[in-house]
Length: 535
Image 1: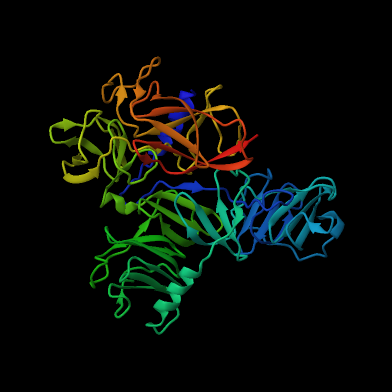
Image 2: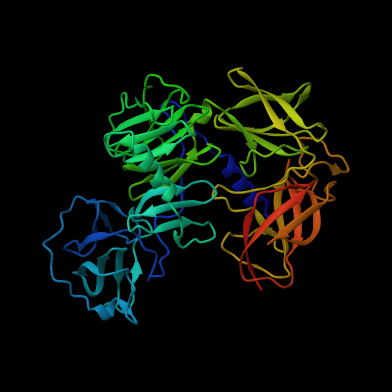
């Protein structure tokens, strides 16, 4: 097993260090800035103009939103203060940018330029980005990978699957298995459209965006104002308060913590209120951190309300632990972030708190890692019953009681931040990349937690031995497309605390393409993950 690689991705799962002084957040990018559209290369959004500097050393591009950028290495784009020259006649023939009547560059040319230092070097602007040829149009390559020009407008779904609405009206999805970019997908957004239509009936102005928190609570935006209702739209309270951030493009809310988020032309903002009752507007605070400096076009929370996703103009989707978790910490499974039951020996995390102690009655739970954003601890192997009464104490000596269901087994597959499963090639001991297919008849190893007690008994908080690792007591099944696969090993993962290693033999005959995989142990099932198979 490639322990170094696994540890790096395990650390990445816990590295959500949020600096909460002025709502400073550590953001990570979700997906690239390009779309996999089957063109001459990864595509971006519309570009209006391209031109070279007089010496040909710099290429400039003017995006559809009016932002000018430049590159001198044709990889990195920086802001440009240069003004585009007068438009010239496009000197590119249709045959140079098409194959069998189909455009290689994503539609008609908006502009074209020839390098002053080499007449064979061409650059063109299209509705799908910037493209460059070094052989007079014989072949083309995209310059869009780092160009901040992803054509996103709205976040449609967030969490394990992220979908966005593009400016073209198409739906795009990010799949960690497809490293080429966002892919065309399907999505029915009539529910959002119906929500806006229904809530607009009680208001005098058209809504720009809306979110329904529960059956009676909703947050809406009208241009630069935010309103909220706690009685199904009979009465509305103005929640705008000190928010002077320009147009509000998107809103999101968490009922339990009372957090309201606003995606605006001047960044992301948050306030807190009692969303179950009418009341005065709270003070808005700008959410900072390493988010790109650009208008925020939308904001969305995942279903548990643990992760926040924002869509910035041109710079795509970014995600982070939701800031309201610092007010309302949440106990989750450490490996897949679900709210599933605990099991003897399993790993739990508390999002939003740095704990100094976790215990149930007189039993102390070993803390394995702790940061201001998250604490990870192991459930002792000897616990029994149907629930755990956890007493959690943080670094400020604040104590809270949490009830967590307990099962003899509660399997969860280790997922990275993009939702890709931690699966290893059993023969080579290396991680299987999400986009790499697994061959029929080969063996894989799945990293998991929550498989319960083992034989021989093993001390809680101690790494499993490198050889003769304790075996899982509960029967373990792995199903691929709902068909049981041969499990050849189910033990504690050597060298790790709270991790289990399941070795599976892939059937000799498989259907090429994605397959659904999940674990079953003690009558409980893990979440579903996707594995790419090839015969």
